[in-house]
Image 1 (cartoon, rainbow, N blue to C red):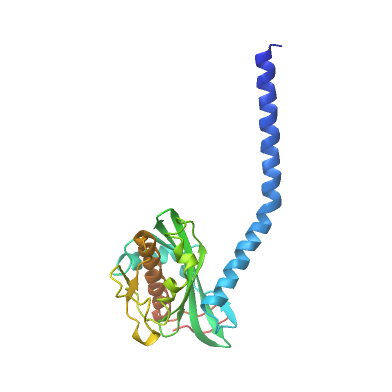
Image 2: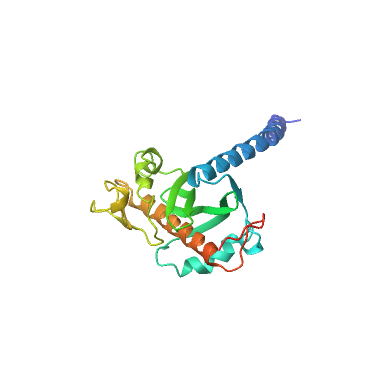
Length: 228
């Protein structure tokens, strides 16, 4: 057997062993990773609609995880505040007893500077943004990542009932305003307009989704609580 053939066989063996090892690692870690992601999501629900003591899905197949994106796509296409590619991933209704106190909407913006940005948005029963909690972001450190490191940016949305927030760069937004003085104008992250606009579009999409849920006749939770 020539040296070249032996080297090729050794390389093939190493490749097979490495592939098998990676497969074992994946199988061992995939469940804990999935559990960690689920736990993070559940924590986000409590953060964005903290008044709720339980969170229920909607008893309508158009609003389940498999169909919600396609249900909302034509609605978002006509929404004035949504100017980019947004996926609605999940909708839950927050309940305190049998009273609807808010809606949790998980969205993903596909036009972040470095890719997808996913987050949960809580919208209260009056249509106001309750809180925004980032789930996944990989923007540029010191620029787009300020959305995570500077929570005051996302706080600008809290307490405002709008589905047409706009990003401004002239300092006239909500960054230094009290809740009672807030408007639809959101101050951009310094040096990161792309990330700011991407997240802003997703928040508008989340509010539109929540309003659609609240205004659709006959919707109820899987536990039988009327939503509208």
